[in-house]
Length: 479
Image (cartoon, rainbow, N blue to C red; front, side, top):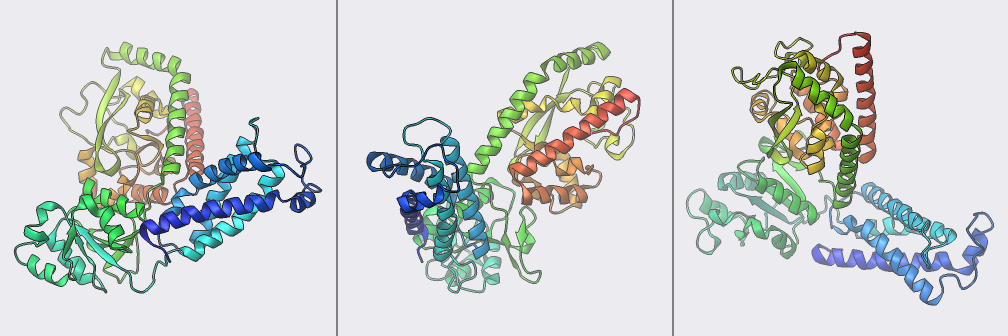
């Protein structure tokens, strides 16, 4: 079985070979003569369809599309058989859809429908089977483990929790002295016991170390698990197909799976690959653009109403927690009196608990009841600070207070905050942070474009209902 760079090259080359082979079989005259009896095609296929130069050009386009779409499978990530089949077939289905979409455009050497139909069918059978054969086994014997961290005391604890000897550890340059040997107890003992390699590199070389030592598992030993270094190392491990584990005590910022009796738990959140991120980002941009354009007349009306009521500012800016614990400024239509938190500081609105917040203005109450105060956040989505769907961003001060009660609160930071989310459509607010976290974590585990669309539809339906309540004079709940 290949590993590291060899796996990537081998899997990419095999995809090219199997794609061309399936295309040749699909284009064979006997196959097409049988197929065209049952499947309507644009034209009756001729014996020389896709022959010569046309076949080469069609094959090149096909290989390019299939190769790019299935690129995430080139990572030697340990997966079980059913997971391999699922991920491969999902990618191939996307590739088939892309090629069929190209078929609607009149370029000279597009694939006939009959050829594409047979080829996709063969890919769905052959490519998943091939990736099953060459896959890395998630629980195979002889796993090579690398400790990754920035705290020697934590490195010692992780080392003691490991069942097998690690190949060494990776840490920042500040954790090492002459020759990569750490000075001072208990560090000397740790270095002596971590194989013959000791420190094998700094965090900046983590990717190279993983490839050089053919690492299977990275054991995380960071002093803090909500910092850029931690998430950067986690991303590098996922990019190289390496499983990541963490001590139970340090698992407050990540989603994990594992035996309740085990000290080391596997981190089970795999960041969306670039294709899925690109699709989600494209959807966010399109949604924000359409929303801002279509709602521009309403935006002017709301701005005028706020200004006429008390002459104060139209927008209200507030610092919120973003992805991976960063912060950004979110804007809303001002719904409270000017400088409402100057004396009280940051606190949850009573409306989130079904009450009535005296700081909310008359116009602001209507805006909150209909969720129209959130419209300026479309700009935050457009510039990339937020997404349409995700955990609602909280104020850093309140994040700290909530975290004192709900230890795993930081798990919400794995994705961009959203305009709406699973917690919002289920009426979970900051007054019940445990329930809110449960919905947010559930969303992170299930996130997909289809799931996002379902949440948006439910939220829009709720907004329509709130507007109807406003028109009929029925008191609605705050947002």
